[in-house]
Image (cartoon, rainbow, N blue to C red; front, side, top):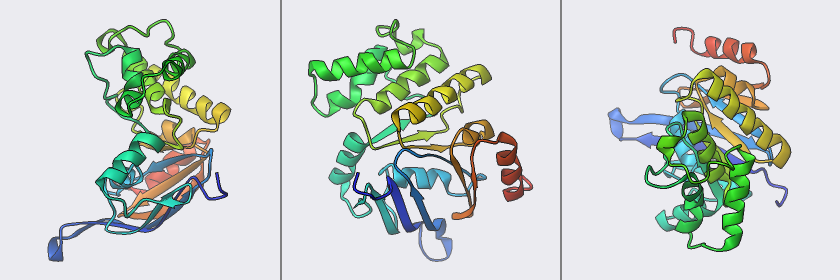
Length: 247
């Protein structure tokens, strides 16, 4: 890295519509996330969490403001540039896993490389290594329908890491899991952050998921409303309740 934060936004705005019906989904959001940091983003419904995730993940472009990954701005990239950025530099973990049902666990993990035109033995070895790392080394040939929800999310995490991205974005990673599977997945994400220094941003409603992060950023009405150190589930609950007293 070049001394820049892993991820930086400055006065980020996203407006949907125009005139009197315009909706300011994000209104001047400025954040910095250090290389190797795990940060959780929380907020009540309509706070701008999903919009921020889409902008950070190069899935949408901002109305104004700046976004930079390792010092390289991407708020002005065209569709082709955004596609390459997502493919080569950002990994995604989704609430509903987004695995292709006809592909095995190994084939799902390999998808980012196949899309990039890579079919070499090195990338296959990395896929096997990642499946071992997430505890699924013996289930590489299983289809998603043959895996539990927690196992499918582990495949999703391995897939997100395949191309060694600078940033991994996790969108409600425990939102479709039972409590035991949630704890397993959170433990895995925390371990990957701690042992491999993976920069990770988690967008979540789950205080338990937010508490594993080193820092929790709270949004309200499209703005950064609060920020606390992670690690304490009750503190996360208390701060969120203060932010959304009728939620």
